Amino acid sequence: MRDDAIAAAARDWLGTPYRHQGRCKGAGADCLGLVLGVWEEVVGMPPEIPPPYSADWGESRLNEILWQAAARHLTPVAEGAARPGDILLFRMRPRAIAKHLGIQSGCGAEERFIHAYSGRGVVETGLSGVWAQCLAARFRIPEGV
Image (cartoon, rainbow, N blue to C red):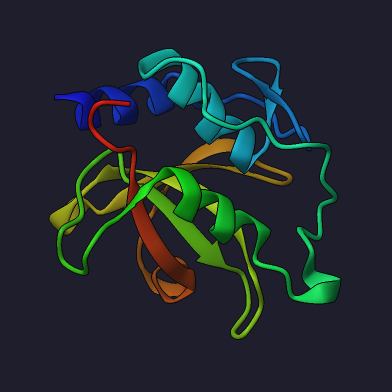
């Protein structure tokens, strides 16, 4: 199943250092670079490569850049339909724009996700507590892509 392949590929990135705008396994990645790198490994060339971006992701204008890109290329996932391999979008503060991504790696009692986090690199984290509260949307790479 491709969803499991996406989660497995993301696990191969664990330990990659954090690098803003990076997307090179082992050398450096940010959250978007992780998702794009895994997409390329499992699916093929990503449909869109972003132009250079700042760490604020358009916060000054409240522009949902990341959400808009996800909506262009991914399929929304209904509440309660989580699977490994889902792409997760987070708001880091209430009413802020969504500017962090992760890849679901476990479900149910072991609900976890893999993400590139400043100061920590690519890590696997429980999807509970603050992270669950910050989860804004869930998407899936469409079949046939």
